[in-house]
Image (cartoon, rainbow, N blue to C red):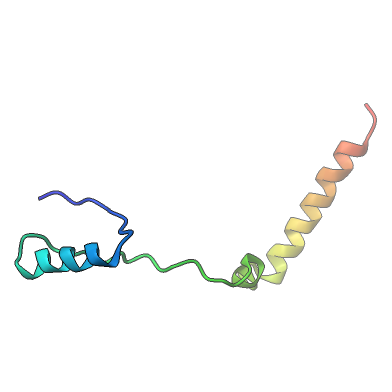
Length: 72
């Protein structure tokens, strides 16, 4: 058995493919991936880092920025 992914550009072709499935020549496998949400990424990630970790990351970032500003 071989699995391939195709893109259908015509509704008539979809009917033909469904007919092939009805006659048991092929099996249509639905894509389990959910489509990307239309929400902003910042909204989706909101709350993914707790306040303690966020404060720690901000402090580290501040220290890294200071290192770039120093003169050698």
